[in-house]
Image (cartoon, rainbow, N blue to C red):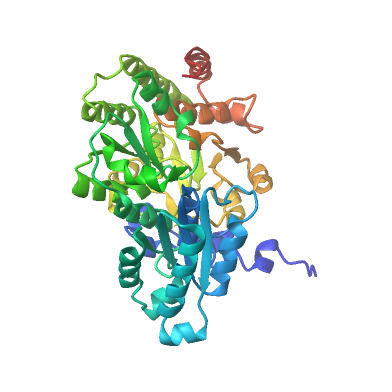
Length: 463
């Protein structure tokens, strides 16, 4: 008798059982309905405290004060100290550690002492008090305290709510931080410049949109998140328009429109040429400037590129994790090219995404599961046998099932028609016999279309 158990039995995970527990995209309209592959997540989510930390750490002349237990204080200190990618840049980060006495009787006295001390030591121009789970549960009225501190010290003191029990993602921490920055802003005389809101990672100056603005002599103003200062945020209403490149910047954009009349354009990392072109049109219409002529040529190139890819990508199947792109829009675009997502790992499902959800469902109805859990995917590769995996995953297990990983490493530094080029090229190259897995030549792809597509890539080049 063989006493060696199968790996899935030892781990308590079984691909067939997982699949039975999952729902299809058509069966869910809120995240509470989306099942995880397993209840122990790997690598798992970050909490909103991380999102707040990522945003505030780059605001010069400010102080981030973390209000919570010692675990949260330690986490923040370790993440932002040293010279790592999350180290504080011009921002001082301190903590007020809550103990049993503070939980029982409130944290006002301890917070008052901390504010006096940080004012004497750092002379900040703005303070962000980031509340974690404990003060949110105990119900301390930190908003009223912040109003008192603002009057007392003469600089804005803002509350960023970063409790983790209302969400399983770090993005609300970024969104809330950006939104409260509106309190720092003052009315300004308008100028022909563009603010960039919501760029979580990457360098906007490396994007196509930035180059287009530079060629038209349109300066870029404040960038949030990004390296900015309290003074730059104060002057943010001088911009002619806010460019929202990710939904985390939308709340601030709407608030600035109500308070200062600043219009905004949502211009995410779209893959569809029509959406990209429309975003450019809206941007230049608000700027009251003519649309650069070359954009029409880029639009036609993107349309031809997408059409040429259809016979190559038609019927190809894939798994997808979260990407740096506009996720549901990406899958809407790919299904429009004939591709079939078998499993989507998602972290949100909002009314904003409904238009693309409907478009996806006109072509197919993939399984959905919660993101940030790539470990258990290995049990589904041999069952569903996707041809591609978009995003992170277990490459060794993929190879066993004939699944090829497709990654877009420069996605964070793209915006505009270059996103379309990146997406189409990544999948077309993955279909190439010289790049693809064994057996890809037997997949029935249209080799004439492949040749035409590769020729188009050579002619396109970098913009």
